[in-house]
Length: 201
Ligand code: ADP
Image 1 (cartoon, rainbow, N blue to C red):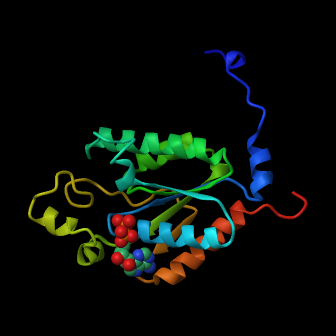
Image 2: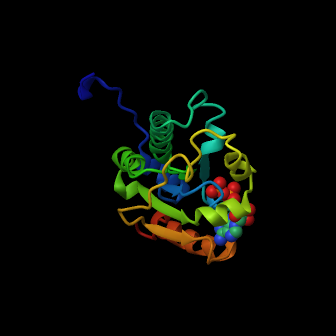
């Protein structure tokens, strides 16, 4: 449909941001299963909430139970999983919300798709870095044990590739070296620097 025929809505993103006194931002956490994405998403959410900021969580495991139901772990399905999540994040950021996304996002192509969908001014990419061996040791969801027994198809880092980022993310958090509290502090300050409206703005 031509742009001129699309409906025009009178309440703008900036109106909403002024009301909330915050800037909309998508925080995209990526990394291996068990690297710490959900833990840090949760800690960040709490810290922002306490500071009076409106947040929304989009989590890979949760979306797969609803919006992305039926998608598997082939490359094609993983791309579609990420595409839909990024489109939802793009819409949600228009509300002025800080959208915290936790998705493995294993390939550069998928991170590229996120960058294509979400404008760079609205996106903070965060690599939650942790080795396969440590994630397997943590085995929070028992998936590494199941994958070792060949009970999980296309398991990331084993049968399905996880690529180290070639384009430097906005922030890298090494969860093998830093504590949850240290990672949360770094993450919260990176987010606050982007999502805060300064007086007079
Ligand atoms: P993911 O969401 O990436 O699959 P989870 O957040 O579910 O990973 O699990 C990460 C696990 O690692 C949790 O048990 C968490 O307590 C632990 N952990 C240890 N150090 C850190 C850290 N610095 N940041 C995040 N999680 C950590």
